[in-house]
Image (tube, rainbow, N blue to C red; front, side, top):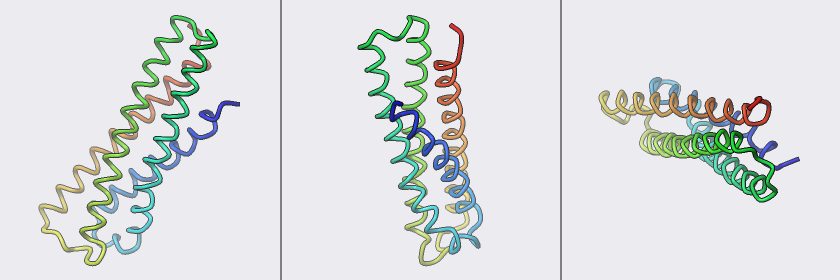
Length: 151
């Protein structure tokens, strides 16, 4: 069984958890002391999981091509899958970085930032979380189509 098939489940779990945790952390200052370290940990784990998934997927893709096990229509689907995976990786990395920055600024005092900065961080985290979730879904859907679809 290819490594990619096993490790992709880590990204499927940790990316949405980071998104949810980051949005809650961004909008609810009162909860920051309770969830701060979990969000900080997820801000590291989720991008690493996305990176490992991307790298293992690239290796799997290259192996399939070298063994000539991909039809022309399948290659188009897999190319889209890989593009979605790359976007997912970058969005998850951005979500992790912004989450860590907010955590660093508020770890000692959850209400250290002016209200406008809190709102701005919350909105940025919400947008990044939503886009990460959407591209994670698109990546998974195109991967499932590549494996189970009829083309």
